[in-house]
Length: 229
Image (cartoon, rainbow, N blue to C red; front, side, top):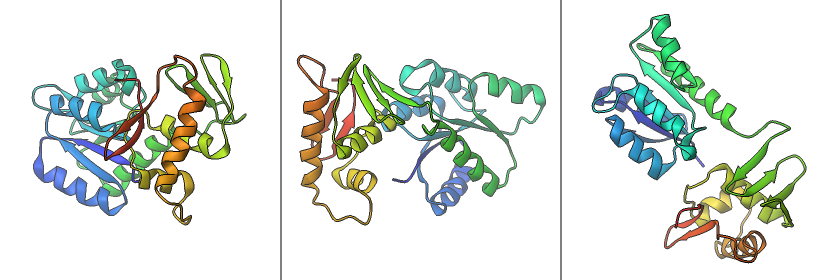
């Protein structure tokens, strides 16, 4: 799965240049030309990182950054600020608003891409103490244990990997083919309907009794881990 970068920038030529360089380096790209559109896209598309211009129409980059950090669903979303403001006070203000990194124009595309990869990598759960959480679900990456509302859940290896991937990308819809690539691997031939079988097993395991079904089926699209109904 290519990491999705949301470019929030009102200068069309710069968006074109960034899109070209990012796609060439294996990223997927979407773009918004103002702060309001950016907030809508973040809610709908769940990007892996936001490349956010400081000076934007309607809602400033600083305010967009603050709103991203205030919303529970996007609180941990990596943000790289992109701006012509290079003074130390401006950099501190950008970082204090919640940005993870700060790149001053003009910039090297190679350096910018390296910084994007770094913030995405830091956001990924790799710590030995890391426990993924979504709603009342908890998945311990080290002990390979899953619980819901404190009650242990027993999963097979494939269901564990499937749940881990969905918990790492809450709210995002993945097709059966995308799940096959990410959970089973690119080099393993498995029929797409196999995903449906393991989704059913996962649902049965985690949705015991009257518990809310956290696995959402999107007709003709795929599956997502989602509380919204």
